[in-house]
Image 1 (cartoon, one colour):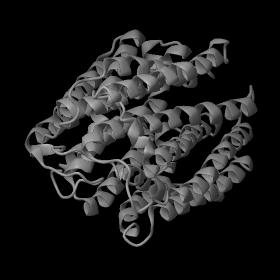
Image 2 (cartoon, one colour):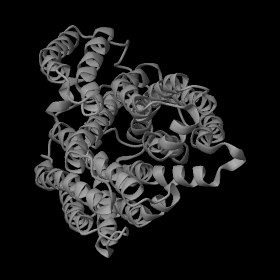
Image 3 (cartoon, helix red, strand yellow):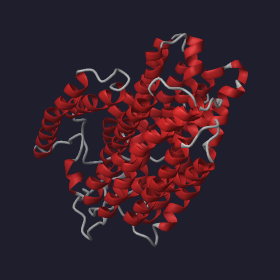
Length: 483
C-alpha cells in the first residue's frame, strides 16, 4: 500500500512547484499574459487549499480508498487536459481541476497511514511521507527543467503535465489491488454548512495571500483578512452546534484540545513558510544568474540528497529522541543554513553562487529532512481513527496556508529589495532579504517545537467501531493494524 500512496503524494506536491520552471515556455507557446502565467501556480494552490479539509472528511464518511481513487483519477485526467490545453484559459481551468483532485486525494494518504499501521510503524511511514513531500517540493523544479530541456517527442512544457498520466493510471490499478478500504463509523454525512463557511474562511485568507502581492496590495486585501475573523467565529459556532446535536461536524474541534495537535498545526503552518525559499532561489538562479532550467535544477541536488537522507533516518532517531527535540534540531539546522545562504547570496558578484551557498543547501536539506516528516507524525500521533480524515485535512491545509503566507511575506521582501534592478548582485541582495524573513520563521519554529512535549494522558478519544473492517478500540491511539 505504502508505495502506491507515496507515488500519488509525490505527484500532487511536484505539481505545486513544477510550473515555476515551465512558466516561461508556457508563456511563449500559448502567448499568455503575465497575469495568466502568475495564476498557473496560484489557481492550483487555491483549489488545493480550499478542498483539503472537505476532502479529508469525505474520506471518513464514504471511504478513504474510494476518495483516494476518485482524486487520483481526477488528477490523472486533469493532467492530460493540462498537457493538451490549446489556450491559457483552458490550461487555468484544468489546473483548478487538478488542484481540486489533489485535495480529494492527499488527506486520504495521511489517514490511511494513521489507520492501517500499528503505532510503532507510523514513525517510519510518516518519515517516508514527509520525505516524499519535501523531495517533491525540491525536485519539482529539477524534473521540470529536465523534461523541458530534453523536449521529449517535441512536447516541450506539455511533458511536465503528461508525465503524470501513465504514472496515475499505474497507481490507480495498484490502489484497487493493494489499498484496503476504511471509513469512520461515527461520521455519517457531510456537514454542508461547515463546508460552505469553512471554504469562505479559507478563501478570505488564501486568496489575498496568493494574489495580494501580485495585485499591488489593493484595498480588498485587508478587507478580506478582516472579514475572515467574524466568518471564522461563525464557522466555529456552527461546528459546535452540529457536535452538540450529535451530528458529524466538518472538523472535530475537540481535536484542538489535544496539545500535540493544536500546537502542532500552528507549528506546521509557521515552518512551512520556509518553502518560499525554494521559489526565491529559483528566481535567483534563473533570472539573476541566467542559469538554464536544467542547470538551476541540478544546483538543487545537494539540498535534495541531504533532505532524503535525513528524512529516511528521522524515524530511527525518534526511537531514542523525543519528537520535540528532533523538531527543534531540524529547525535550528535550517536556520543556520539560511543565514549562510543569505550571506553567500549577498556576496554574489561574478554570476556564480559562492561556495557557502552549496554548504547552506546541505544544511537546509538536512534540517528540512529532520523537521518535515517528524512534524507530520508529531501532529497526528494521538489522533483516533474516527477523526483521521478531519485531522489530516486540517494538517494539509495548514501546510498550504503556510506555503502561501511564506511566498507572500518573503516574496514581498525579495521584490521590494530587487525593484527594477537586474544582474547577479541585485538578485543576490534580494535573495538575502527574502531569506532573512525565513530565518525568523525557522528560529521561532525551533523554540515553539520545544513546547510539544505530550502529557501522559490523551484528551481525544476514539469511538467504538472506528476503522476498517469494524475493528474496535476506544483509546487515543488505534492499536494494531486495521483500527
